[in-house]
Length: 389
View 1: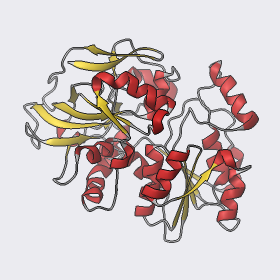
View 2: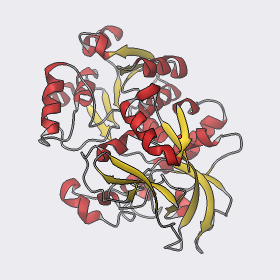
View 3: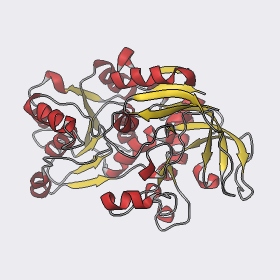
View 4: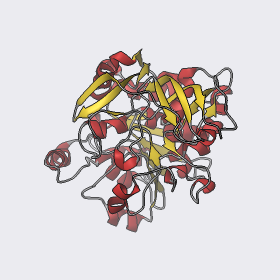
């Protein structure tokens, strides 16, 4: 089959690789209909996350049609149209049974590679470095899905492939952040980052009852989407002296009740701090340009919640004193997609949530190297590039 592979830092290629097959009786093989770029991929493409090997197929946000099922798969049949969360759950361990699917104790066969850094391993994820399991990813014609009965979700009639695609990762990640904010009527939620995850976090915050949502970014086309497609207020941080002052003024001097950080380790900023982070990151003295994370902590009102969705590694200058003295609650995790996907598909089917506008560019898988370049460089207003294998 044809697949997009990682051959080194900023070295991608579409190549012919071996087709996947059934390895375990609970496996499903999926004929991939759509798969999409994700900002998390940029971290290992750019060399900030270790653990990729030349020839690895990557990609973790996808949907498709069941092509083959293992002998112990009970809930699926060949021909079913399904969407698959990016983290792999077993459905039976301590964490899966408590709806904390990205923490699955069973699905990461390379747990020993994570343990020295994280203390305890996460669950496995498709196409996202060998410390995260070494699974082949979704930027391919076919992909193997372990534990198919708990990881494949049928797509309802009336929900398009493109709408369903983003419930694999971007939408449940954003929804996780909003859910963590403990939103009550009248709350104001600020979202740092207007990529696909940030936009879905903003939309989810409104779904969960926030009175006001304020999105902070610097790209005009993304801020326009936040206003017109989500109904949020916006702040262009490159056009103001202080985001903190703008948010305080917008909230009567108190600050937002909750803040969602949806950027991650390759965030942008301004001034001396931006130059400092870029220099340390270039020298590999830290992995993160964490300006959005620091800003989120500083912006949140006393006693509020900061939900962290961005992927981080080694963060320098984290304002722990601010967290302590303001009495903040910080909540963070990779997305527990299996908890949220059925709910999100219902919201889409009922017309309460729009995801289709995230797909700004569609192209064949053979053009996916160009798609990642457009996505990384934000060319032509590219929010997400969708590939059709």
